[in-house]
Image 1 (cartoon, helix red, strand yellow):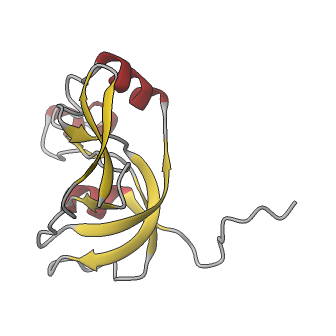
Image 2 (cartoon, one colour):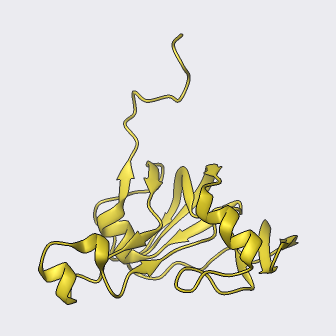
Length: 143
């Protein structure tokens, strides 16, 4: 599949890469929309992010799409669901998670790969930071 792979400072290449393999708690999403945020731009300009991405890696972390595969342990999603996935999940074990300050988690799990046809959403992110898009939300503005 084609993907935008970051190799370093302002070095982004369109390459063919393998479709990610799905583990028991993961989901595979066919990307229908991928956005570029300020963090993506900073990562591109700097060539890395201290905690979020280490090149070479597929860039992009804001996405929505259709689930095309679910791992054997996935209970809350099924193939065909439309979803939006955040780029991280807290560990639920560190001091900040225990103090209900998950936004400060010391062990955040990050996910990248939205600038590709398919992206794997790891189980922890699928469990707590992936949400179904309601069937009535078709994405077409009414006015």
